[in-house]
Length: 107
Length: 175
Image 1: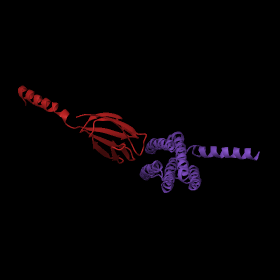
Image 2 (image 1 turned 180 degrees about the horizontal axis):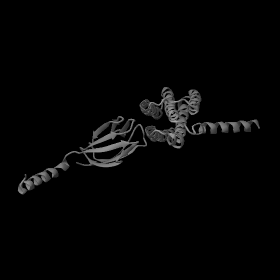
Image 3 (image 1 turned 90 degrees about the horizontal axis):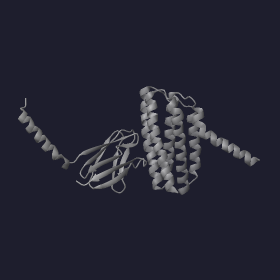
């Protein structure tokens, strides 16, 4: 059983620990289902990872022309680490009508 | 008079081929639906392989590769499903009409080359996906009684609608 004082101390340590988190990279999930990226638009920062999970029975890609090309096989996941700040529009090379957008903020 | 008559016959044939699926498959059974859906996919794979052997245009080649990849994936699911459900796909007039049309189209396309082939192939892909998607929406999906078959057809429809839009993009790029 924690004494109230110890409990407070633990909470303070936890909050202090949490406040240092924003500097750390996050993994942001995007689901592909029935040829739709969801969420269609996400906000991230440099160093974050985007992980796409493909629930479809066919393969897809998340592609930015001349920048990167991530192939996501059917029922699999694939990811990329964001290196550059700025807004990017990506699409599926196999199904060009599938589109998504990532706003990449500086670190 | 003769000219007018041939024109009327030609128009009638056009209407027939477009309505082939809808008419013949008024109330198809699950084994027939499975056969039609599988056949439609195989025919598009064959058409894509013809395009891959004939076309040099980047957009057309990658579109054809997409058709092979997707239709093979969907048909693999279809085969797995019919095996699981112990359904034997049953040949029928709609499947036969689709196959006949595709064979005729292939003969026609074989005579074309270069930009002419590319345009004709892509135009046919738009028309073909429109026909198949229409049939899925109005006939095949509503008639399917097994829920898993229905669900696979609905997934197929989403994918094939994407193909139709993709083909329309390619057609616009070829102009």
